Length: 249
Image (tube, rainbow, N blue to C red):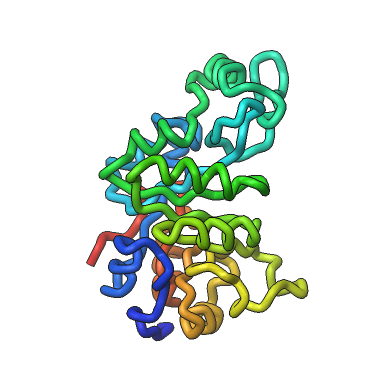
């Protein structure tokens, strides 16, 4: 099993998350809510996750043409009359199209925070660049916590961490990460890494921990893999099946 000094890992994360890691606990994150209950990123999906004792709910963030911060994974919505690019349509039109298509309206960030406030935190996955300023301003207008912002847009993550000290940041690495000449881990500029579970070997986790980086593995949907990752020392797991998370010790 990977070893670590938990007091040194994830110090830049929000206090409720950092404290759990410091006490040897791991962070349970529901991926988009519970996609089996309702389409991911919708309010009904998020509410379903609250019944499963999760710490964070991961949501995907984009911006509509009228500047609303909205929750959706893809750059387009499949409406009943065709695809609508999120950045080219208003929130009202996008929400109407989605509700006619899948039976659920589009959620914006403010509504999501109200829905889960006091019950779980959010892991906000940036799906486009340039969201650091509007997101920071949105978070400053609310007392919602805890929040961890993740994604591949490193400059945006660094800017968010600089502008809002109570928000944690996590650079996302996919399973092809080691094949390229990416930035060294000690220059991540974040308090954590969100990594594809395929690269979460114990040696890699130990390397991250030595740098003070917490490690959150995604997206893991079977219990055997979850247990293997926990044995490798990861600090959190993101899953479409939060009902499968091993019992808390």
